[in-house]
Every structure is written in structure tokens, then in C-alpha cells.
Image 1: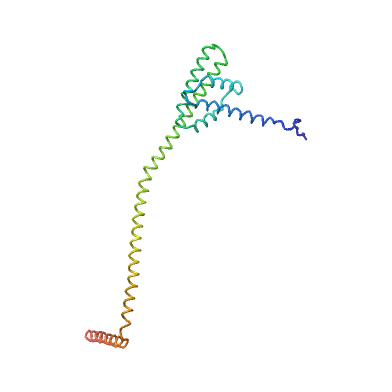
Image 2: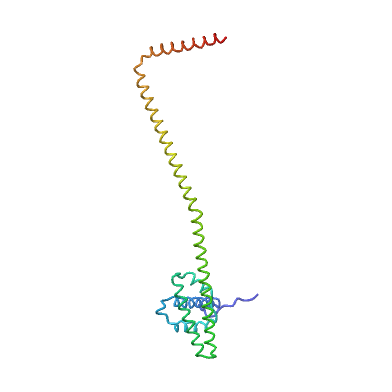
Length: 220
């Protein structure tokens, strides 16, 4: 059975922890370079960013392009033009440095890194604009197709609601009017002598009965 190796110096970072810290440092450096590129063009100094990238190349050699994309996607669209303008100035500055340096590998490598940054930034901003356009197109299509239907539905619901209110209003008048009429009838019926009412009703029924008999006899 293999024994587990124990780090003799307690508290010192493990190789995995050192690797994570180094990656985090790369992320921070890239974000710092992008953040400076997004500053005001009037105060932008390409030499500062050039030196930042020179230090980055010495330590890490290549970009984490996902960091650049994430920064640009989160960047206010109004600053996109400023970012690219500053990046153009940085690229021009790197060309001048490379020309003065001749066959200096560091200067030429610097140009390649800045060109890669410029190329990826253009691609990321193009994707950002494309996504933004698609989103606005979807919103416009939804507005064109659904808004009239929603308006028609609202109008139909209003008409139905008004009809229901009218029906319930009419029913309330009928119900309460009927109750009032019955009250008047029963109130008036109290003054009728019950004997007279029964006699009149009885005579009326007798007359109707005789009429029915006569019709039956004559039909036969």
C-alpha cells in the first residue's frame, strides 16, 4: 500500500492551490488591461498598456480569450467605440516599437499579442452587436404580432364585462321591482273582505265551468 505524502511545511499552498492562484492572477491582469483600454481616449497612454502586456507576455505567454469576451459583453455599448479606438492606438504604438526594435523578438511577439487582442475584441463586439440586434428584432416581432391580438382580446373582454354588468343591473331592477310590486299587491289585498273574494272567485269558476260544458255539448 502506498503511503500518503505529507507536506512537511504546514500551511504552505499545495500545487493545485498555486495553480489556481496563478490563473486568478492571469484573470486579474487581463481584466486590468481591458479596463484601462475602456477608459477615456483623451487620457489613454498606449505606452502604459504596452508595458502591461509586455509583463503579461513574460509571465503567461498567451491570452485567456474568454476573459476578454466576458469583459466586452458586460461593457456598456456606448464605450465599445472608445475601447476599440484605444486599442487601435495601442496597435499603432506596437508597430512603431517593432520597427524601431528591428528583429527584436520581444517587440515582434508584443505586436502579435496585441494583434490577437485586437482581432478577438472585434469578433467579440461583432457577436455582441449581433446578439443585441437579434434580441431587439425578437422584441419588435413580438410587438407586431402580439400587440394587436392583445388589444382585440382586451376590447372583447371589455365588451363582455359591460354586457354582464348590464344583465346584472337589469336583473336587479326586475328582482327588486317585483318585490316592490308584490308588497303593493299584498298591502292592497289586506283591505279586501275575504268572503267577497271567495264568492266572486266561485262565481267566476262556475261561469268558466258552464262555458266548457256548453262547448263540449255543441261539439258533440
